[in-house]
Length: 224
Image 1: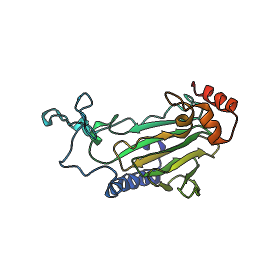
Image 2 (image 1 turned 180 degrees about the vertical axis):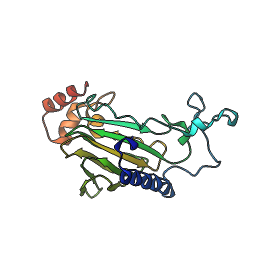
Image 3 (image 1 turned 45 degrees about the vertical axis):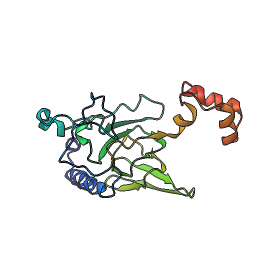
Image 4 (image 1 turned 60 degrees about the horizontal axis):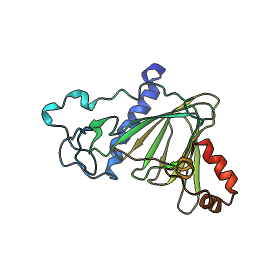
């Protein structure tokens, strides 16, 4: 992904960011590991606060290796113009118990990573390409935001609603790092208008101070 740009400064920035990612777990969201590693056994039916471990005899170097962030995501697959490729414990079982995960986020021109929150993690955003307007809203209802350019970092505190919006003329690319193996994502529009079963329209109309017809129209856009 980065090598194809031919930009050694960008490679340095990315390596520096990865180094920072190992500092993040010191502000632990996930509990400390009790052993060197615990490769997740995604087929196990044992229910834990996390995933059961693969037997040590079945572990290889490939369990600590992931190529999923090397390819550009399809930004035309949704109306928001973004694509999130996750390297979390589900896609990369080697992260199990390590308190760390990472996303690649691709943006079309004008693409938006819709307002959402991560209930289990703080997030660091590193822009590699383009310019993103990044912001979060505090519990005091204050917006903190910046236009973030290549090589710059913006931190989003755990659990707060935030977004990223491509304000550049071309595509944008960001890498995000979390201090959780599975940070979770609460997507605000989908949570409000596409839950299963859906929140009653009269409740949303009252909460948002709009007509029920408007609520129903929005729900229809999300297939609800």
